Image: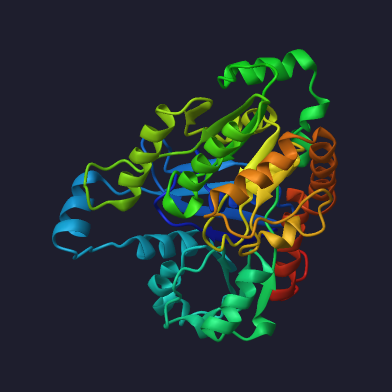
Amino acid sequence: MKRTVAHLLPDYNPFPPMYAAGTELRVYEVARRQQRYRPVVACGWFEGQQELEDVPPMRIRRIRTGKAYRRVFQKLTRLDPLPYGARMWRIVEEERAQLVHIHNEPKLLAALYGRLQDTAMPVVVHVANEKPLPPAGRERVTRWIACSRYIAGWLERENGIPGDRIQVIYTGVDVAARKPHWALGAADRERLRSRFGVQDPRATVLLFAGRLVKEKGVFELLSAFEQLRAATSAPVELLIAGNVRESDDPRNEKAVYGRAATARIAAMEGVRWVGSLQPGDMHDFLSAGDVFVMPSLWADPFPTVMLEAAAAGLPIVAAARGGITEFLEGCPAFEFVNDLADAAELAQAIGRYVGDPAARDSAGRWLRARAEREFDWQRVCSEFEDLYDALLPVTAPA
């Protein structure tokens, strides 16, 4: 009988992912490929979803919390009689899990700490960004998984986690299911470009995909695009995909920034915001473009969209921040941008690809080949299962 691994997710994104959410995507892609283990995913419930759903080989257990319950016990009184962590542990016990894998939510480690103290169960914590780690429970973690060498260094340097308890497992992309843009017929690619609103069939199409928030560098990209359009006679267009935080609260900086970004886009020529895309639409969006621009102002640990762009065969414009270098280093016809806040420098970096189709092709083919060779989801799944093998004692076959 296969042993059960409990994949524990926070409750703020739907599972399987309905929009760009790297953690949920990783869990879904790995769990549906597991062969040596039985994956049970415990996560939050969203409208229209089943509380229990079997999608072989995985089982999904969604924790349902009604609006009235959240209002009374989580917002007003803060006296939650049955918190998310307690419900999650009930699932762990009911499903007879032999290993707990917490995904990118350190708060879950703190919530489960008391219960984990009473077991010898191996505990894996996956870290995909620099969220503060709870003091309680760190010693109970058997293995920390870092999404990049950058995050591994942060765990060791800033949090005192011993290096021999950290393992780097990069995320992946479904390369086999995603054709590079050059494998599409001319008519199909023209159809995609038209679908996403490209106005000029001769245009070099730039793409951005991500949340419309300050750290993603949306305003810096728009300023660079204005300079690029003014400096070149070649037709250039920019498509932007991403969600805007919904809130009317003027203190909500992310919502204010998102609304300001969409207003500026609406006033610009050659730029179109296509809204938030479903995961199944992302590859079509990427296949409609020629250059992917990733102007992240923060130390992005290892963006999933970078692999998606590579799978589409697109050259990428980015700065050497966070874990981005770990994928882009060595790419031909490519240079990292030094200062993304310098619109002229960013425009020049994009312009090199606009004016040189051969460079676009060389970089895009190299990135596609690297994604095929090293970043397929099956590799991620195998590394997960090899880790579980190492942490769980060998048992005789039933």
